[in-house]
Image (tube, rainbow, N blue to C red; front, side, top):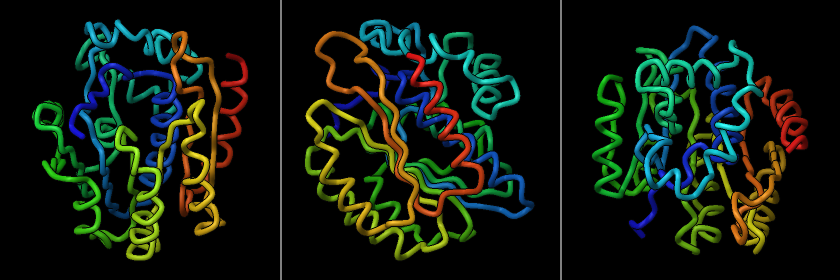
Length: 258
């Protein structure tokens, strides 16, 4: 499906969870003076205006980053990315995960991101035009399969589908198994929504059985509005970098204050 546009949800509490952990992982991985690969399968437009009609309509950013920005000290990598994005694009701008990666990675690193939606891809390419990022207009998993194992072999892949296609819950475990086999040293991070329908539960059972050493972290939060089905956010990380365990414990405490 090509109907999903993340602007309606940008900066929500799930984004705060996902992007803060992504920033922590990339910050740690770039401390070593060795190049790395970053691959993202479902990129969106990379840069969002939280003052846009679509964002204001859902109130998700108001319940998300606009409410909890003070959770992160100025030296936290997520806070640094937010600050740079605001300086360059305005106080109500918000960085999607491709921009988080572009701002934290180095010229020696390799960045590949995919987006299939034509308008979203055009916005993605424009937002990332100042950075050395390859923006693919194709299915994200097709791109990932074509690139793995990447060069450099050290690196991280973010899998962040919209789950608008209900078969995602059954196909993703197979895709992750194939990708992790081809790239056994890569950090593979899968984001998933926690829904009142519990649609994610069978998928996580399969992933956990196949990857027992992966890190699984979930946070819960009130629905953004009455009847909204998403009540939490999850990250499933194969080959988690050092320091991620501490970061998730800290986030757990923060989300419990909501």
